[in-house]
Length: 110
Image 1 (cartoon, helix red, strand yellow):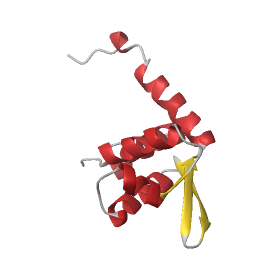
Image 2 (cartoon, rainbow, N blue to C red):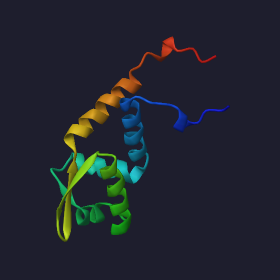
Image 3 (cartoon, helix red, strand yellow):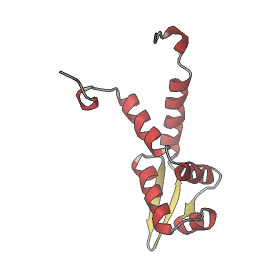
């Protein structure tokens, strides 16, 4: 019987790394994070001025980043103020550092 990804139990760190990686997998989201990392906060309208795309598209990317926990939003109708979720941003940096600093010379693939 062939096992699927749903059949395998992953550590919390592995699952969280995958969530962060998925959120980081789009150039627009990377651009948003770079922008937010250089600002204390911003509103969706600020990003519309920086990125040449519709507000609804930017909102979808913000939603993905927020669901992954990389950003947080403070709702003050009709606007939402976004900023980096510092605790999770630091955790993402730690997880990726561990991932990329592993000693892969010890792993034999062939």
